[in-house]
Image (cartoon, rainbow, N blue to C red; front, side, top):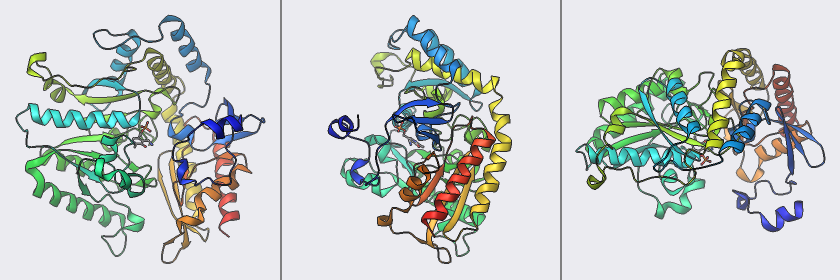
Length: 445
Ligand code: PMP
């Protein structure tokens, strides 16, 4: 198996060879919060199958829903037809979404869910008498996916720079990264957030005539390093979007479906975006599915006859796939049956305590938490916050060490990510945090 893998498979991001020297585990089974490899070794999944898994692996209720659906209808199309699962799920998503979101447009991954939002906002402006509003505000350090449109609104140089001639230009605003704030002396989160907002306001003022929308990862910039925004930041961004009449596109691909302790990060902040992108947790991590939700105001701008070209020219072959929608419906039922959000409360508190304790370690510079998301930033020198040089691959080394403790982890550079399935038990969370602590101690001494 390893030979087939090395001979024929091109892994994402492998050319960065950050995992050099590590054996690719061959995962053959999932059981609850554990992944099992071809040799029978069990690893507690600390990153929820790349931030997607909600109820654990191979949960019987979801497996049953998928099997039942496969026997009934595997796929058709939403072009000129509908299917019962896609329609049912659309209704459920609108029921649980922040108030005011009214329509669901399906696709099949996070990048396209965001890109669809960008296309919608662009076309909306054109069709409501503002053809001059063509530009987007995007944030430094943002990650929205790897398609050309999603990269254009991204802000992580290492991923995006090489493609820059292909990307459409955006107006880049600073997003609070309080631990490394460039705008304040004291790195006080409140001041850091306020100064970022001031910059944003200034940018909106000077570009107000040409702005179509703003794209943001609400609450946490994920791939940028699990960077948590200060309280009130998201609400203030919403207010600025309203003031300048700009569509707000919230990318909840990573934070949606309970991750922050609320169903959606926007709901937790008490706001409704104009457009909301969902994927990852939507199907509990089982099947590729994504949705872009929007308001009736936006949708109505596309309601013309075909000859007027008001149509939204976008659609994927697997849009609204009934098997993926069946998994998503089964997942939403489990949220209720397991009272999952209530059950998160003690786990979130415990994660917070354990993260805080890690600050005593000599090379843990910062810990960040938003609900069931944790980020542990390792630094070479704690006093002046000097990062470890990239070539030390400190994050990868800690994650490889953690395998000795039966954990599967994946870092973001020097940041250790804690992102387990939401169904993780308190006992398992303890095992996860004990292993992470031991691995950090061993590698950064
Ligand atoms: N947006 C966010 C916030 C993400 O974290 C990701 C994936 N990590 C994406 C978009 C892209 O999703 P996908 O990989 O499914 O295209």
